[in-house]
Length: 298
Image 1 (cartoon, rainbow, N blue to C red):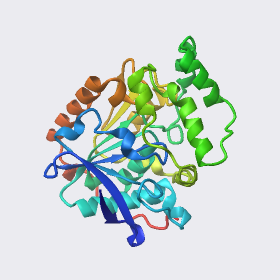
Image 2: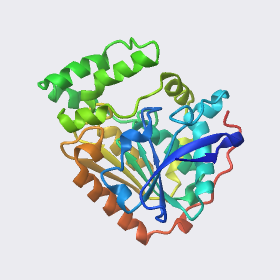
Image 3: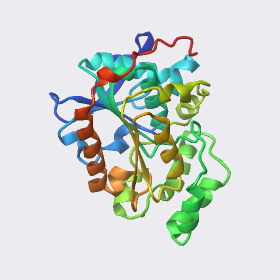
Image 4: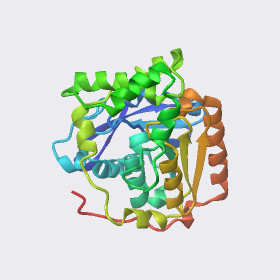
């Protein structure tokens, strides 16, 4: 585990998986505020790549910030820019899962010349795009599955958690709703990487800038948005709508897959990622517009 200096000089930590001499790939966990251990090596993606998995503020070894603005997804995007500087080298591939897409999108918007390509894995983006949600439709056709049905009742029921232990109990109760199947592999994976309630609430404590969509539409960086056809938590239609936001957006839906493609359909996941990264060989970040120096976020 290694640390870098985030905003205001705070020591923030990250894990590394893969060859130390390989090109870094920044990987942002979801949750929000879930420990990145649940990402594993992304179905073997760390075999030939140096995966860099930051502990966002208040997660893992990184301390909780006392400045509210720094704890939000807007503020944490600035930390990722400093992580990129600490890693050195040229523009990097960035991957983000679920709620981690917020930080990734903000980082891309502010630093397009530093991003070789962006992969958004089952991103939760109903806060950003307007699309007819299909999560309920997916849930309805899965109601014959007992584990899913019980979990979905909790998902749609009252939020009764009041502290970190009860928050993680709630997370475990809804876990079957996040997978297309509820076998041994999925059950084991669901237990990896706890979330922190206080940090999760702080992370979501900022509204997106009003012109964010317009700015994203002007960026030429290739962006791949991946959905799971059985992901009732996020759905497919919002992820498809997100891909339309970007000038070089691409959408892929992985069949028989929920919220965690690298766990549920590892071969298909790697195939999709490989196809995208191969396409980046024919695109240069020099085509991207200059970075923004957007201040006054907090």
